[in-house]
Image (cartoon, rainbow, N blue to C red; front, side):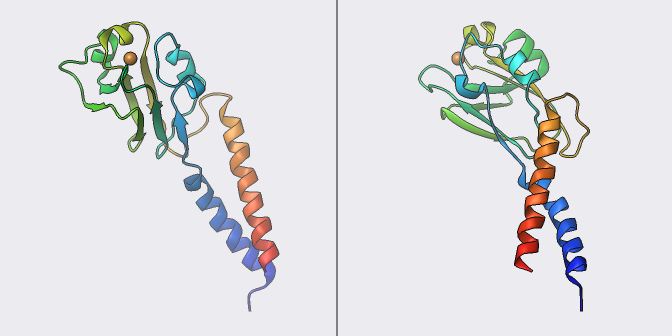
Length: 157
Ligand SMILES: [Cu+2]
């Protein structure tokens, strides 16, 4: 018969594997500012991590703005007429980041894009090493959740 310690070890292993998957986050673009003009999305993006499996959420007034996924060249020139990969206009668009690499989003109103309503991100593999300091919080969060899962499991034995 398995000892409590063996059961605990198995549970710990399971928790360690499961926790990063459960950490897939909904990332609201611009946080409380949402998706609008006159906001520095370059700076905002540099302070956030975009991991495989996360959701990018664009919140905005759909009467005024929209979201257009474009390529890098069209991002730089704010070309939304020919180069659009995909368009969103619900006002609360949830875009799952299901491949790694660079992504570019602009407002469908060209003048807004020129005024800075444009977002470039890089989607990282789920388990990639931290590229900047803000990751340490996420690592701590992983460790904390794992610990909590183990404690809860231990109480149930
Ligand atoms: Cu706009």
